[in-house]
Image (cartoon, rainbow, N blue to C red; front, side, top):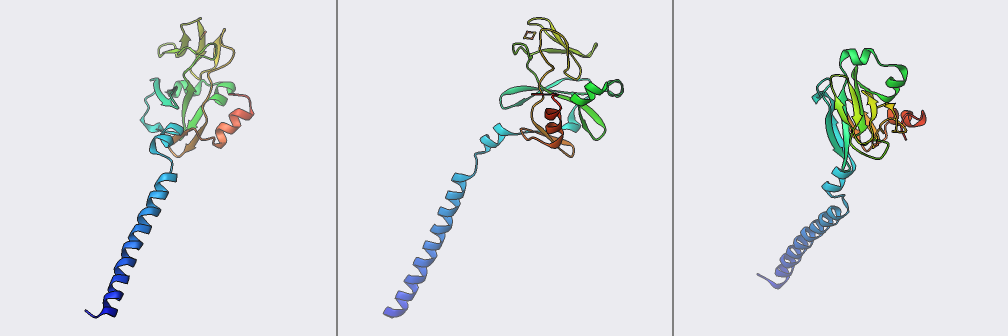
Length: 174
Ligand code: FES
């Protein structure tokens, strides 16, 4: 191999190695500024609303807090007052309670009775109806509603969609 062609070969080889190195370091940089999967998971919880059964309370988790999800039966849906409707989330014609599962008095976790369709907080005897509205003191207000966004048949907790903003503006939740 002549000297000049060797130099040309070495130049190309060095260029190729440098190119690979540049791509690798760009990839490493991008990875370092992307949020970790655990951070994403901590911020948002996505719920498939078609998976819930009528009048069966499920406790999900969002940012380490319990979230009550209760799908209404047709009868529960038909009996909603205007005030209860304002607290409920409607998705594809179905009604749901989606509330923070912490009593608004001192933070105990209320339990749901599917027979009389109400919540009882055993700590001081506060009660809530099946939409999470308070029916007996001492809780000062209904169960709080976490920020949510409706996306087709899924609910994204942690994002403020128009329905949630509306609830907040109307004083339905804090
Ligand atoms: S903490 Fe629920 S009634 Fe007091």
